[in-house]
Image (cartoon, rainbow over all chains, first blue to last red; front, side):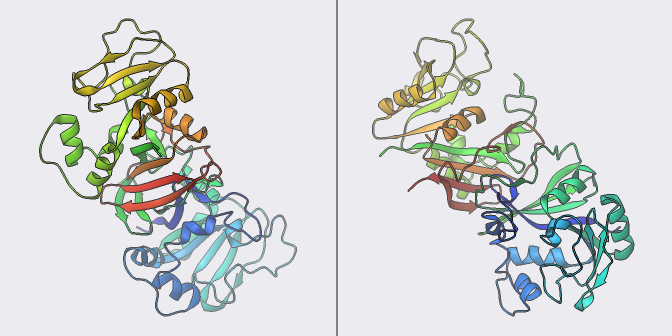
Length: 216
Length: 216
């Protein structure tokens, strides 16, 4: 049975999945980049995002790699797709990731504003879903077939899917930083009541990896 | 210069320092005991709380031991001292810890209701401070001399001292559990604005140890 997963989602010690003051120059908010200090140097991240050889192996890399394995479709919130707000002024914005995005499968972007699908190099097709998170998940399931669906973020998107009990497994990496504000990942979500429990806890020097699972 | 410290304070993955539904039978709330699963088996905890030999050594034990070293006075919130609320009905409640509490130094209990000081076996004297957190800290500083002051908890007490910028160093242990509710330790506190940054991050199998420091 394919799973709906969150992987490699960084959260600060004080519970934020993005920093305060998000804007075009600071898409993750002030200090938000520090949530990903553990993943950026890894071999898998360097290979997938930059096409580079080298990078670190070990626990952190294992978790990044695991997050890319067996994924048949992604779901992204609109802010994670790009900084454009409101109706699309044109179709020039094609994501943060250049000509060949690192997904290589269909990506469903949640938005209130319709836009035609388009394909990028390497097998990534962006689809825009205007009728809600469940519709996006239905389409992602169909696209993914027997593979898993990854909900990439951001915080608001993950929270919506968690509240709807639609995430089966969630890997978060607690980064040893404090942000003081921003988007709280778990505040106000009663995770045990939603069926989650911790099934794995693997610390590394750079982060604490925790896997939460629903039911089972 | 003596420091005001928080040590070995357990917090859940979702940010709670105590679970929901605190009552006489559940002084740490539902699931709250799981915040301390990392510390209870340690050699230092077993020795200090139960007078037992044995127990685990290693990272977790090092942090428990560090929290007991060089402490000249403690400050506790009233709920951490005991379950009695409102005016003291009598002087029969003498803490959770039996005849010989594990402090062995003066302990200042924050309360709205005056009560005479009393001494227990082993050098612990409980004092009751009715004129606020700064007064309690002044008295603790005088008692501690050149040793440090430890603010033992609970959550509300720690939050008050953090907001007042009176804690110099804070060791929290993130336990790999979710509680879903209870007393949030850091929610709404802007730790960077209050001057805190992470100076140490040491994972163990059982918890992630993070030390925050103010200034310096």
